[in-house]
Image (cartoon, rainbow, N blue to C red; front, top):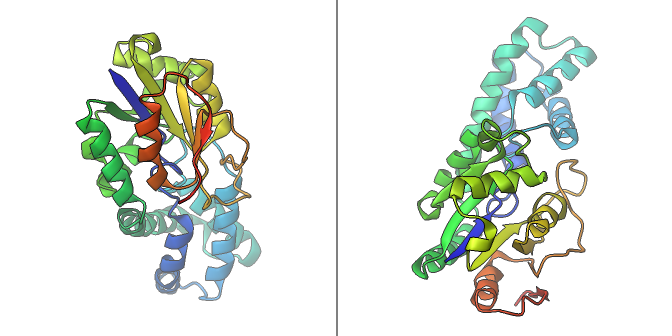
Amino acid sequence: MDLVLFDLGGTLIDDPFEDVLREIRSDLVAEFRNWNLEENAVAEFLVSWREANLKSDHPFASHFLQEETWIAEALVNLYRARAIPPMQEIPLLSLTILRRYRELAAVQISNQTQLAALRQLLEWLRSGGTIVGVASNDREFATRTMLIWANLAKFMEWVFTSEGLSKQYAGAEKPAPEFFHAIFSELGRPVSAWDNVFYVGDSEKNDIIPAKSLGIRTVRFLNKKHPKNASWLDTTIASLAEYQCTEREQLQDIFRKALNDPKRESKTVSPG
């Protein structure tokens, strides 16, 4: 029996942050007006929000759905610079902004162009008897919610997250090997008990290297949309993965070959 596990953020789903920020600007202007804040403070707030998001890499942080902490940090910075908004209003204002962000993120994620090819891939894998799942470093609610928004949840027999696994398995956060050990404990079958096990991810550090160290075959997706200055992303090009690609449409061709490749040779699939 074959098993294919996918990373979520940056692999199946692209970061909606910048797309949402472009859309949310008009909402922020209106919201700031409701709170008696200057409209020209919106641009300054957005710059600070981007900076807080890019530099932060703390456990179980959902960059794709955002966290109140980064919005609150940006509002605090605005307060320090302009004495607005009043400090006592930041807790509620940050939640209002976060709610609107997530509403817009749901629309952005559901309309991402790569999803059609991924659904076709997942349906094809499942039709051949392959067990398919997600193994994400994101939060539990964020992972499951984004899979539903993207209409990918119905293909996933297993959903693992660092946040969820860590409640039972100490240190089960990528790239720690405990993350992958916990997965196979939950599956009830070690890596050696499967005909083929693959892990598909966009991060060399978090996905490829730790998976390979446990004897898992790997596919590196080089996501060209990753912002180069995000502290929580791995944008390195060189990879130790057996297979590499730059487009999701290439994954089905990779697995057609990989699931019948006894030599386990390293391969890179070029666009087109």
